Image 1 (cartoon, rainbow, N blue to C red):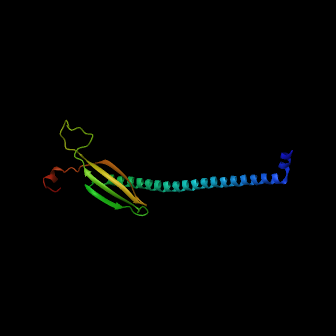
Image 2 (cartoon, rainbow, N blue to C red):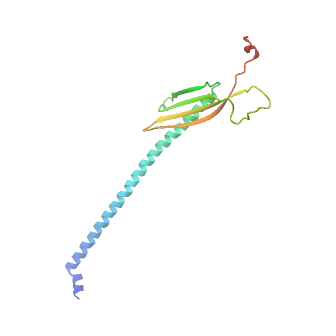
Image 3 (cartoon, helix red, strand yellow):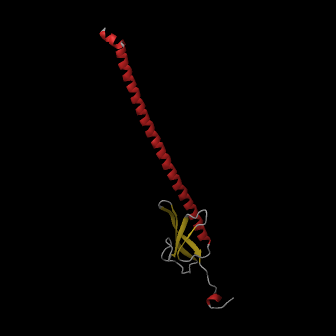
Length: 164
């Protein structure tokens, strides 16, 4: 009976309320911690996604400029051996390019022995092309390929020193 009176007495009721308020305060603090961890993770992931978007945008732009430059080199009637470089015009002026052209003695896939000795009609050129851009750190995309160019054939009159 004494226990029953203790539970319904104002003193017992007051101690239960204090314990209940303490539990509510603890639950609120835990909720705030969980919420702030979630918000922090969300902000970090948005920041990372923004960084990746910028990198991807620059790589795609670099690949597009690389394709344009290699098409420009393919369209030239003759390519000189050596190294050249330059900067793209606005709005792509943050990007620069470097190309290296060297003539190959023999194509990679052709056999060493040829059944009929003929003068080759094409020149094989190894072209290395790199497109670079600067952000916080330098980035680049590159291609290493082989281009075929027709050899200029001299006519018999020109080789003998005659002018047409």
